[in-house]
Image 1 (cartoon, helix red, strand yellow):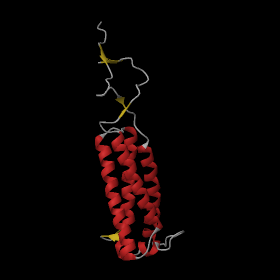
Image 2 (cartoon, one colour):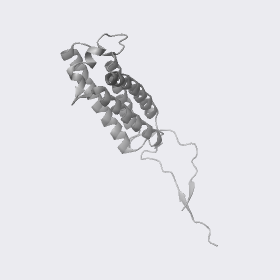
Image 3 (cartoon, one colour):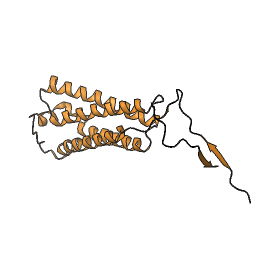
Image 4 (tube, one colour):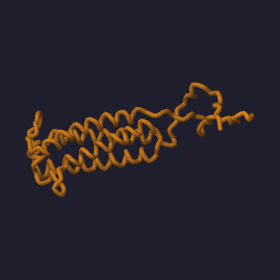
Length: 179
């Protein structure tokens, strides 16, 4: 009877003698921000779909912005695009929770958030310059998008190839793995 062969796997230190870092909290923060964005965009999308007026608690202008000619692209309300953006960001954030060091997911979250910030800046420019009204829900969305970009960029930097910590892991014993 053959016994299973075992191979010794040693966890190596990174160049400079530091140990690999653990994943930060950024994906969880991104997930919360995206869920807030989904709620915000869903409310405006629901108002666009039903034709009901939006409740504007702080700044009067939500309905002016939502009914302006700039509020639609090819006849589709921008709130629908915002909802898709936040659903996609929540999906990326959820995937980053499970695989925080995935280069593709990290880069995708960073680029998607950057595109969202660019569009939010353009939307704020239109509100102030062309529509002459401000929507509180657009402001909330713009803030969420900027915070998503900050969290995505911090996560990208914290989990990059140069991400290290100066303390050793809990156990320095070699790991045994079956082959």
